[in-house]
Length: 228
Image 1 (tube, helix red, strand yellow):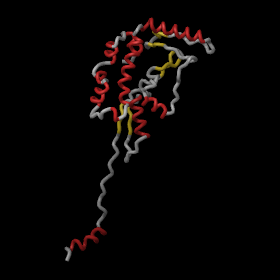
Image 2 (image 1 turned 180 degrees about the vertical axis):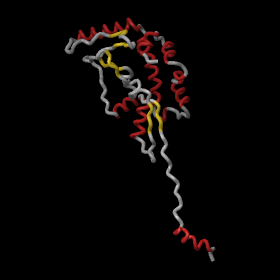
Image 3 (image 1 turned 45 degrees about the vertical axis):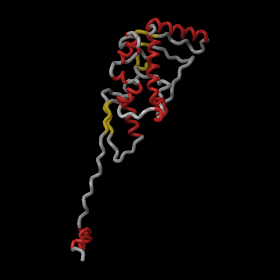
Image 4 (image 1 turned 30 degrees about the horizontal axis):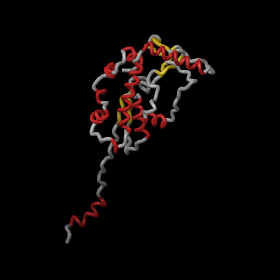
């Protein structure tokens, strides 16, 4: 004969109050420091492309009164200028795809491009290229205008412009290694190992200014054309 408590168990379960259930796991806060391109894109993807349950509370901290970080414009003497990153390199596939995802249209330069270059030091323009010729100008006039601007840049920055282009191309070659498929590159255990594999680890141990000086750029080019 079964023990008495086994016979009474169904009755006890009916009259006993429900057992307390374990509380659902509370959502954890996610804090992002800075709303530049890295912070803003991280917040965008966490908001639109993840479906955690329960959903976390996303908080973005920014010390300025705007988002975008170095992606900014300034108005000087009634003219609007880019104050930070304004060009997407055609080989930067991730940023190009992100721009497409946001529905941003690319502005491409051409013979009729009306942009010109100015270097603003916070108080005045220290360098300006010539204003573009008026619309409808002849091919010869546009070519002479481009040649004159090239000579102005060469006079101010010398061969540093060519050396800067060479430096950028070398960095891009290393960066492009990460676009290779998994079958042609190893799996990395940490960020340091990943950077050493591509040859970019040295950039994390020195300042960009030191790297550019070693590449042969003069200090004027670095201070006026490069953010370090």
